[in-house]
Length: 219
Image 1 (cartoon, rainbow, N blue to C red):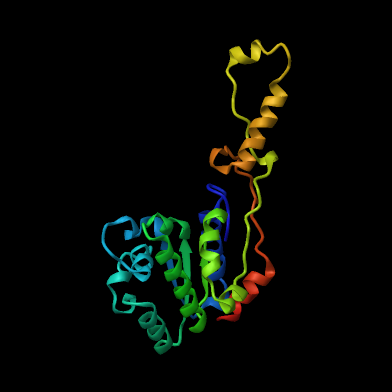
Image 2: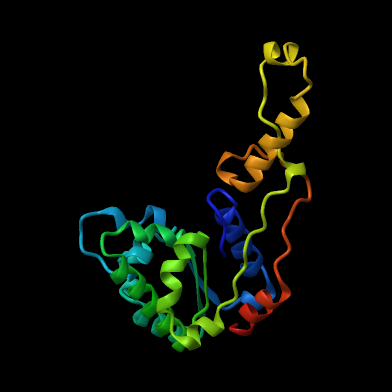
């Protein structure tokens, strides 16, 4: 799930998780929802990618459980329970804050390879620019199994123009207000970090059918 900063990646990931886990097909799923921005990745400790995932889990007890020891142990535990493991990983790009970028990207590639081999689906978020560092190290079978969803740019009609002071409006004899409003909306649409959005009822993105159908095939 790719998108620029503040484009709604986390919101969309949560929506996907809710939609998937509330379905009848997911009754035997064991989900792990991880927010890497809250993991121990920024600490000075030498920790593995799995420890990043486990320590960022929304269930704070997960990393201390026996099944939280490693991916292999977790998958094996799910097999014994005849359950399907499923990962949701938010903010993959934050791992690039670590000093050794090559080591980080390689570790993620190995994690995806092992998950693919173990038939474990993963849904994750990342910024487009940062994903360029991860993509080259992917094995061919892993890359072919990935479905990419690019969040669309914001709709200018759903944005609010930056406000101007009353004095500015009174002195705007050249009638540039309309141009100003259009420019501020254009800026927000292209740089979502600055966006001031309106909440519209019923405004829900539709996930591609191929994405959900492929995800449900794992269950």
